[in-house]
Every structure is written in structure tokens, then in C-alpha cells.
Image: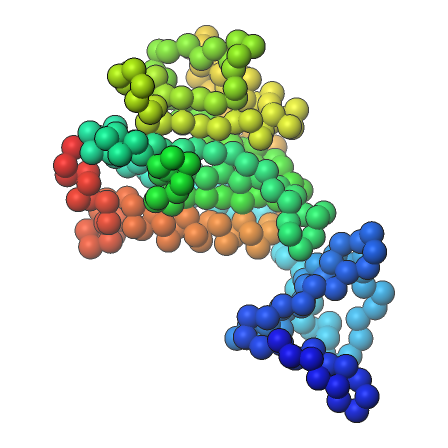
Length: 281
């Protein structure tokens, strides 16, 4: 980035991957960023009084409205990748090799606030392999803006229901215990002092009454032996046609790329990087 004065006016010259954030007191920001394709402008519209100039309106991008059917299809695509990556990661962390290295599969549900615009909030779902809280193998991830909360509820409930069904069998979950720390460990028996191989962190979801009620419903049904089908069906039906943020599509693409490296026999056997570990179980 360079500052130059030309004909008495101050210019900011953006070089590769530079960006500038414009902000008024008490308001959010607008970011002007340079990439190989040109300059991108994004941020809070309340800062903008007018846009003028030849061809400027042609550059304004308005996200299209996606049908509920297409949104559900995208969600189910991600959930299928999630389930398969979960199964591969579970096999790995239950193996002696990974247990000796104290590597765990971590399913986390987190909230976020955008750095560039504090009005943009949302939630994520991440499934990774960790060693002492450090990610050593990324898995799948999905990012959903707060405005699309019906979509996140469907994804979160399905991911959590699958995790519970695969890792708790007939074991009761003491979620009503006052000492419960909003963390679900697997019911796999491990020697005293060893790290639990499977863990899911739920604390961030309890900031939302809606999400908390969904979790309690899933845990209650599990303890009563009732399938989660009705809860998941109702959440699916709540999804309506709407705009999706770029972060949703980007995280879906990210998960697809990671999936190709993790799941055995995806298209061909040459893309499997963890098969060596699986063969040693």
C-alpha cells in the first residue's frame, strides 16, 4: 500500500492483497480490498450516502434468493460429508497409535462476529482432530450467518444427533447434572488418566434459547430411547427460501476439499492421505 499526492489530492494505491477499512464514529466499516481480479467493496450499507459513476451499479452484487429445496440439498450434502469424516476420524482416535499420542476427535459448535462488520454474526460447526487443543488434522466446517438461523439449527441438530447415536449407544447422558459443563464425551471406556478420544463442545449454543432447547430435546429423547427423527423433520420444514452468505458457500467448498483427502476411496484411492493410519488398526 502506498500513499501519493497527485494534483493536490491524496491517493491510496492498493497493491496485491491490500485492503483499507473506512469507518465513521459509532458505525460499522466498509472494506476496500484488492485482489488479482480488481477491487472489491463490501461492508455496512448505512455508511453509504450514494453511489455514482459510470457503470458503478453494474458492479453491485446482490446475493440471489435460494429456494428452500436447494438449501436443504446443500445442507444434506454437507451432513453426508460430516458423517463420513466423523466415522474415519473415530476409527483413527480409537486406534492404539492415536490414543498413545493423545489425539482426539473434537466436534465444536461456536459463535462468531465478523471483524469487518460487527452486525454480521453467526455460528460454525467444526470437526477436527486435535492434540492438546491444537488442530493437527482439519476435517469439515460450515459457517452460517445469524440471519440464517433456521439453516444452522437444522445442521447443528443433525450433526449432534449423529454424534450421539454413534458414540453413546445405550448410555444415559447426565445433562441435568448441575456439574455438567456442556461437553459430551464418548462412552468409550479408557484407562484411568487417559484422554477421552471423542469430545463435543456445546457451551456456545446455550447463549441461544432456541439452540439450547433443541439440544435438550435431543438429549432427552436419547435418554428415553426416542429417535430424533421428529425433531429433525420439523427443523427441516422450517427452512425457507432465502439469501445465503458467501461464507456459507465458501465453507461448503472448504469441506468438500478436505473431504477428498480424508475419506477412503473418494473417486479413486490416490486421494486418501489417512489410509496408512487406518490400515494399522
